[in-house]
Image 1 (cartoon, helix red, strand yellow):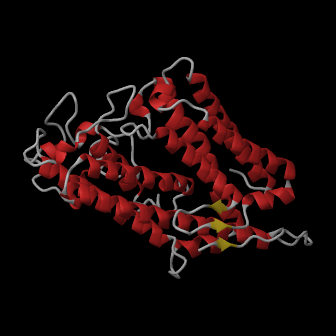
Image 2 (cartoon, rainbow, N blue to C red; image 1 turned 120 degrees about the vertical axis):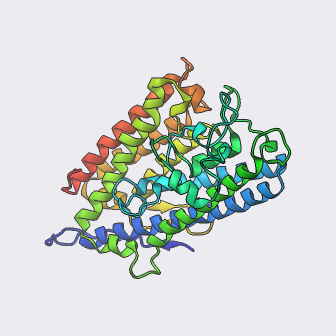
Image 3 (tube, helix red, strand yellow; image 1 turned 135 degrees about the vertical axis):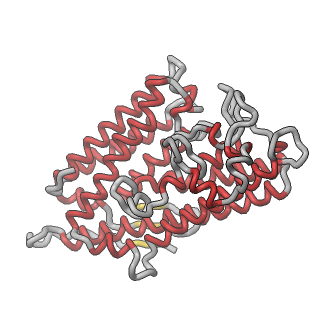
Length: 377
């Protein structure tokens, strides 16, 4: 399915709100991409759940590798969705937003399972305080007592598949025998129960966000968003893009790790997939600004975009924005991988810093783009 609503901007006489119909189309493109990305994220999470269930039912290197690949595949889609955060939409809603069950980090791995320093740490190895391993237990434990007490989501699943990353040359090397009854690790049955419950929590949380954006549901947030004023909606869009590129991506997700030179501060530290997290977040910003989404499940979107709108009102600023968005992606691609080595190798650190600086410049450009629309962010 291709969703498209591009059309040429016509220079009609200014009214109470110039380019009102074009701004309405920008909102619709935003909502269409949000639904497509979250729908695909849910689909990929279901595929991940299927692979995890197969692995736990018959632990082997083959089934574990298949589950790992499904996790990596799911991250390729979810990373594009981060641009829809930071404005209290369905993912971050203060009352019921499930983001903390999906992508919370950084994670104290000892809260969930054994570590190199303690073979009996974590909920999995504590049947006294956690006699039952199920979704309710895990959800109740999430961020209990500390924001690093992450018990579920992509990164808990990542840790349960890869284990700690203790090597500069590889990702984590958790053995599949951790899930084999009678194998060398403590509590393999509980570990399998924990992993399958985490997969179900992830599927349910993404289903909630997908449904919240579903245009087939008349009461969904899809219509709440497109029915609000153009100024409010555009401010939310631009605020989210500025927040992700500047404070969140350049700052929390890159500069903190760069400054501390510590892999514990990187996003996907167990799988060494952080470089893809960073790139996909940047691509999500690019896609939203240009109104495009290429779906692996035939849910492509190609709609009237912010870029189309700004191209008419301030073509110079639009070209600057497009150039900066592309440069940011190129600089991220140029970083050394894995990211935990890029932040400590003297010859590679400057590339990380160049990407950080480009993201900061990108955030400032979003302020200027907003000003082109007489919007302050």
